[in-house]
Amino acid sequence: MTAGKRREFTGDRLVLASHNPGKVKEIAELLRPFGVAVRSAADLKLPEPEETGESFAANAELKARNAAQSGLPALADDSGLSVAALGGRPGIHSARWAGPGKDFAIAMQRVEDALKGKQDRRARFVCALALAWPDGHVETFRGEVEGTLVWPPRGTKGFGYDPMFRPKGFDVTFGEMAPAEKHKISHRAMAFGKLVDACFKN
Image 1 (cartoon, rainbow, N blue to C red):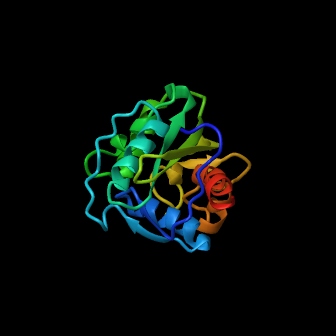
Image 2: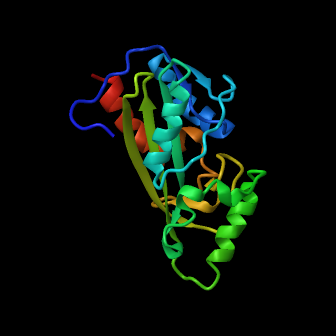
């Protein structure tokens, strides 16, 4: 993360450092108003780096730097579910809880099993966004949204843990919420708003 003045993004193309189609679609929609052409790491056949960081920000930076080796600026997201009663787990390991097949029905069941006997169902989604340039410069931003976990999961919109997460102040889960509504309040939208203010509005 850089201190002081943020670097402005002046290009018209960038790489989304993700192989997750749901995540790529959501971030591409957020970028559309800025006229930025987006390619995914999967489109460019870039390998997925091992996520060895110990925080969302560290992993986002690692992925962004790796994708920026393509010669284009790269935007990476590292995000996950942090459950209060589980000491913040699954946290940075949120995707791993879905197993090698990335089946989030399995991941949600694992969370629910771990919560058996616990009354506290508070959780938050956390997102770190890192924008890296080929010269090694990186800007990083964090967003969070608080909520409660419901069971059974509800809704088929969104992806990941969305069907079991009900954001604070709402009666519906992210899985039931229209994408446009979710984009106004999600952890990714919060981080993206900070990114836009710092790097796209100078």
